[in-house]
Structures are given as C-alpha cells and as structure tokens.
Length: 161
Image 1 (cartoon, rainbow, N blue to C red):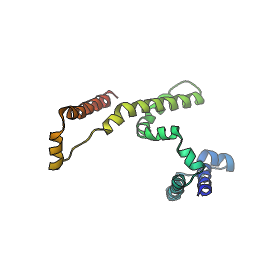
Image 2: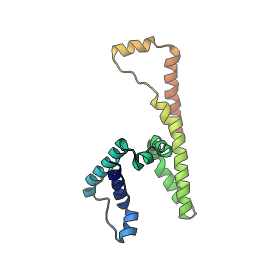
Image 3: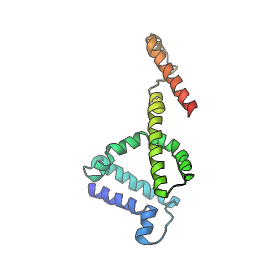
Image 4: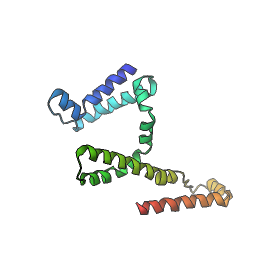
C-alpha cells in the first residue's frame, strides 16, 4: 500500500503544470474537466494509503505543520485572496512577495481561527424539541450567558473584519 501511495504521489506531483512543463518540455491543460475524475481517483488512493499505510505518505500527512494548516484552512481559504491582491501591489521582487503573502495569510488566518472560528464553533444551538428546551431551562444562568457572550464576541469580530 505504501509503494502504491508513493507512486500516486509522484504522479500527482509530476502532473502539476510547473513540473510537467520543465520535465517534458510542453504544456498540457490540466484544468480540463476530463481530468477531474482521474485526479479524484488518484487523491482517493493517496488518502487511503495515508490512512492504512505506515510509510512516507502517512508520516508526511501527520506532520504538525500540515495538521495546523488543515485546522486553519477555512480561514485561509476566506482571506488568501485579500493578501494575494495586497502583495501584488508591493514593489518588491517575486520571492519577497511570495514570502509576505505566505506569512501574512498564515498569521491572519491563525488569528481569525483562534478569535472567530473556534469560539463560534463552541456555540450550541438548541432545537425546538421540548426535551431539549426543558434541559435548557434547567441549565444554570451562567452557562446560558456564556453562549450569549460567545455570540456577541463572534459578531463583534465579524463586523470588525
């Protein structure tokens, strides 16, 4: 399973446009919808080999930095275009633009995750189920106020950003 996963990883790496063009000397449109299914199968095989294998793929995907980026990935998705557009306007070389983009995106997404996303994910929304409403009424007042404070805190930061 590990060898198969590593071969799939190499295929995915070789089919990125940058490496493909430099190795084989011509361009191919990898954004064609005809390649969606094969890429989905390749990524599925890669993930299965990471889950059930014991080799390089599992080790690589369990690195703390990759797990951290996975944790902040939604915030990173939301804010990366903002920082991409801001760094495009800078009058510095391309390597420095990439470095500034990468660091600012990661830092801002980390703060966004810690200050907005994680507190809002702890809020419990109670249903109209009668049993759940009875439990909510029996809940101590300090627990109810904590949920309200979390909502207000989250809304404040959403408005701020």
